[in-house]
Length: 96
Image (cartoon, rainbow, N blue to C red):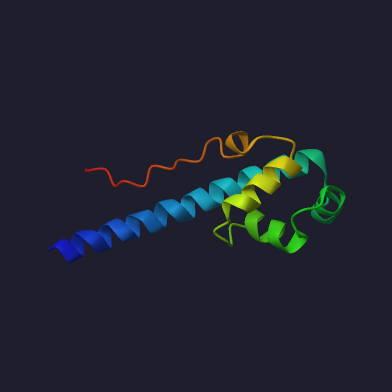
C-alpha cells in the first residue's frame, strides 16, 4: 500500500513539474518576444546563455538549473522572482 501511495505521489509530482516547465517556457518566450523578434539576435546581444539552451528552455524541453534562470532573468532585465511569477511550486498532492 505504501509503495502505491509513493508511486501516485511521484506521478503527481512529475505532472506538476511538466506543467510548471510549460508555464515557465511560455512566460520566458513571451518576455523575450516582447523585447526582440529573433531568439538568436536577443541571445547574441545579451550573452551568457546560448541560443540552444534558451530554445530548449522556451520549448519546455529541459529542467533548467537555477543558475541559468538567474542569467535568463538578468538578460530579460528582471529579477528571478519576477521571472518565476505565476509558476506554482506546491508539489504536495491534495486530497480529493
